[in-house]
Image (tube, rainbow, N blue to C red; front, side, top):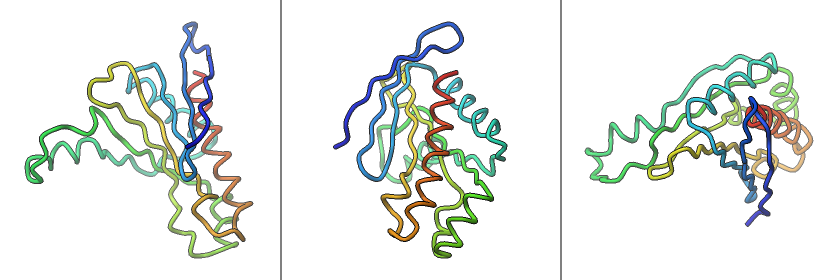
Amino acid sequence: MGKNVFVLLLAMGCSLVAHAQQDGFRAFFKVDEGFDVVKENVELAITEQGLVIAHHSDVGTMLARTAADLGAEAPVYDNGVVIEFCSASLSRQMMETDPTLIIFCPYGIAVYTLPGQPGTTHITYLRYSKLGPQHAKQALLKIEKLLDDIVQQAIDW
């Protein structure tokens, strides 16, 4: 299990607390803010990097819509979306190192809220360097830095 890091941030004149963890293959954060604000902040941070959002995968709605058909009674998320985007330059570096890593493109940052936890929003992304081959590690670490920069910027707002 990863080490907890507690970071006190100031955003828009009010303090937000973000709890960050890493457990090997993913980084995840808990932010004391509502879903819509955090999602918009992540979207803005992506576009601030000069990147284009390719797709929003509304996982929360899909799970809610199919719950009855699957015999599920409890919701998994109140809200849950994966925001997908790519960096042409970083993706090229990654795939020139290993063409099979096309599977890591587009990158995704998930933003979600859980039932019974109003006012707390979660953010998570994959740590590709822990999943990909060793010979591509440097390229994958650059992508992880981009993902972390985006999340940190979203939290800082």
